[in-house]
Length: 91
Image 1 (cartoon, rainbow, N blue to C red):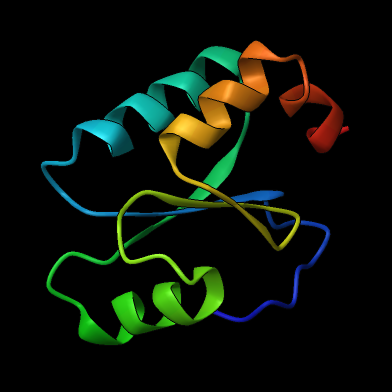
Image 2 (cartoon, helix red, strand yellow; image 1 turned 180 degrees about the vertical axis):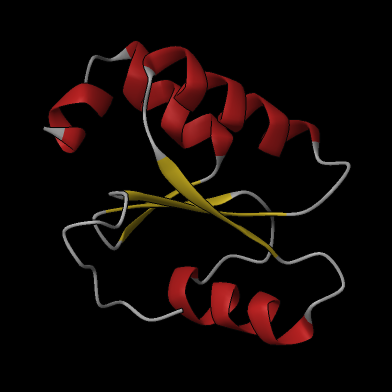
């Protein structure tokens, strides 16, 4: 994956792993809002996990990007939504 975004790419990219409750919660929030996203599963994939850490600076999942900018994990995206800021970031 690269930071190059084409018009067909979703604005939201989320690094996840299996059996992750916060990943499931982030998926549910995005689905509820009708937001398309690209999911990158880092489970048992050292290369993708390394990419995630390099891009985000974070080692936990999910790591969520909007328009190439890391916004953090589930707590951060939920706080943005609660504050009415998530829709602004996506418009």
